[in-house]
Length: 251
Ligand SMILES: NC(=O)c1ccc[n+]([C@@H]2O[C@H](COP(=O)([O-])OP(=O)(O)OC[C@H]3O[C@@H](n4cnc5c(N)ncnc54)[C@H](OP(=O)(O)O)[C@@H]3O)[C@@H](O)[C@H]2O)c1
Image (tube, rainbow, N blue to C red):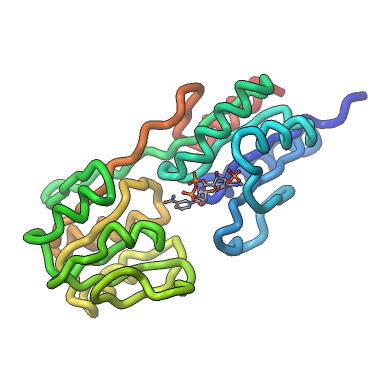
């Protein structure tokens, strides 16, 4: 009798974790669930099913991994801004014939009355800053901070998951460490304590980091949101339930 099918979840999001949880529970012996993380930060708690950590070595490395591990199904549940791994997943799955689904959480809908300014890139967001505010809450990750270098007269509160290994390339800033999910109370307190007058964020969507949008609306401060890239072509769903239904159809 053939063994269970193996599902590879490309993770790093709350939705990927929820999917791993639900798939382990729903399919039990019919499916082996492996989650892959890039390994930038340690997982907050044990990941359901099996875990592998670290890059594959580009699309070719991922294709080799799919073959070597006899992966039967791939769900790309990475962050909407993690574009490279998604391009690689599409290429590797196309090359090996492994069915691939993208779980792409919907963007946030700005609440009525919130001043919401969209930017096409981090650099475009930085160009919008002067005039929009003087004390910005910057929630674009450590890699995103460099787009905001050389901005005299602006102060930043930078939120990171872990302390930075080197000084950030910003003129004037403080760092706050925290990992999602965040509460509205937490975001309200940061805005108040640091006299924040502007929020800068990626249009990430998802519940875990939505509280800052609610708190910005409450505080009456504008939000500059960097538009997300489109998902890779192919099957796309927006909920864990839809992803489970996709799996059910293939098992
Ligand atoms: N970008 C964000 O704003 C953001 C926010 C929250 C969480 N995350 C999560 O953090 C991880 C890294 O994000 P990123 O923006 O740096 O990704 P990225 O730019 O799309 O990927 C860069 C490289 O990291 C490796 N990688 C990324 N995700 C991986 C995964 N799930 N498993 C194994 N290798 C992975 C791949 O290395 P190889 O080419 O060597 O395979 C990939 O080429 C993602 O898994 C994402 O879900 C990202």
